Length: 395
Image (cartoon, rainbow, N blue to C red):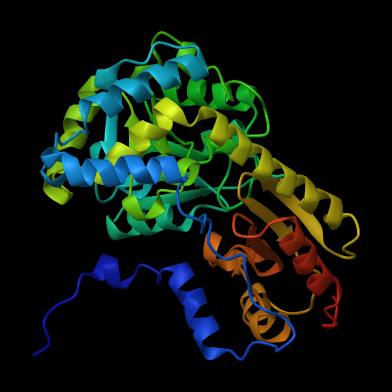
């Protein structure tokens, strides 16, 4: 007899980025078109040298860098992030309301585990971040899809219609992955009011906060003295300081919730990686000017995409921000087929909308995600030149 498998894991779709890499392995790239990989939202350059030096020095000189640390993260990093967030948002965020995690995906998993169990429901706007959906599926939690408009913004009134006796939370991502949309502050306030009125958690993933196009605080939710009764924020140091391989994320929530989160984290990772925490702390203390430059570079790439979209006949831009552009293509083929063909025909690796939508969502076959963290202005021009040259049959 064959050993058993988990039904929830078996029924969870395969990791999309790994699927795209298989397309790449199976394809023959055109000789005159070197690969433009816009499939994954991650910087490919290493952290700045001073940060790497701080991490290297800690590894060589500080024995605690090799040991277990506090389950909720090192106190100095928690203190620094609490102070930083209080300054950014103009609110009162205390150290005991901060937890450090092994990446933002773990922050999401730990938080959801403190909110819901198998049979419960969580509201996710569509298109959704696929790892959020995967985690819910693995836990036997139902994702209730929340439709968004042409600019990928959700409507609280539509969310209200989805709330039922098993609903436990609403999840928002801003700036959005995969869509790039930046949720207006007033919209986030409406969702906070909605969640509070129904006794739900409002979970806001702000992984890409440092690349927001608006100067200053992206919202005022932390100025609410009772924010912690409803609001939970997720954050990632990985994108800000290029620490993707070191896995450093964070949760901002009530002290009571973090006591529940601690049970999950102690069981899964015991403590977040020390070297990543050391790098994140150095970044918070010393790299504000450097990060401001990184933000301006991403904003300039965003503007380049906006400029080039105007000349891309038949295409439509739904959203563009942080690391992402989310587009509608004009061709007479479903987006998974188009995405696979683009590898061999145009040397472009990107992801189809079907990886971010329910199977029943008709628009998914018309949409594509472009993650432009890995391509500079010249790469963006080459990308759009290749897209403009495609001669597939139009609808």
